[in-house]
Length: 299
Image (cartoon, rainbow, N blue to C red; front, side, top):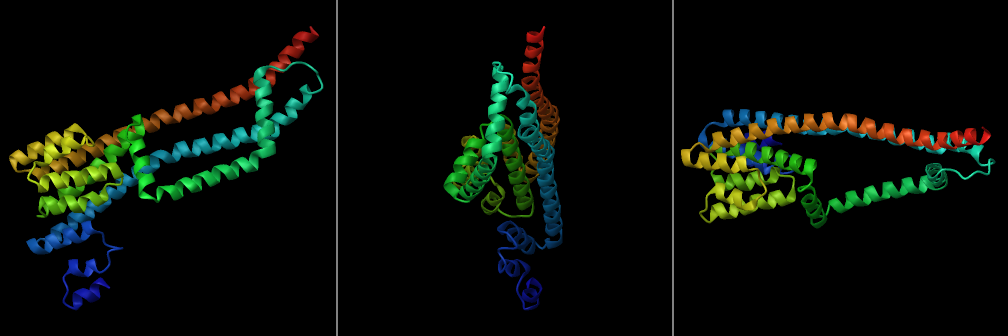
């Protein structure tokens, strides 16, 4: 379709504008800037590099959660199997002993009975709650509250800020470096920020810059972005090298993201193994404690 529009006399940006669901405002703005400056080839090359780096960033963040999710799923399945099939057969030995069972054993028996009697209902409840939560996230008010809740969290909040800062600064760097004025660049770049409170902060930055304020002071006033972004943007504004400084911020934030992802993965792996081992240990102790007491009574 784009090829047909170009053959018909339209510019590439005009042809792409007819398909907004495929080509975002960022793509169209960059292509239009390349056409106006006569550097369309270089702009398209930078756009390709940007898309590749953004996809790589997305893959790194996604891969960081695959292993913890897999270990958690296996742990839940193992514990459920133990409580549903193994524990009832072992605990049945103690039912005819007429002895007072330890508290841990009684709790284990209660959990086992709960899973055997209401396991399918609990699973349906969890699935229903997940579907309702996913449906609620489609509404902007709930999604905004959820995103605001995530930001102060120790690990997830810092990860969210780093990812969105890297996206914003890399987009602004490629836009301003391609000759796009700052205000249109801010307007187009706000769309790549996935966290809604941070996107609102970008909109606030846009308003303050439009009113004549400096970008660095506008960034500092929002309190949503790391201080290094404020300092480097201020340096770029004073030296006239804002695109270079924005690119440096994006590189720094991407490196910090890699470090945080590796650290979080290295921390989660042993932590999940310890939690799984601790749960299995509690189950084993709940089974062995009545056996020890029976041995003492026999002696």
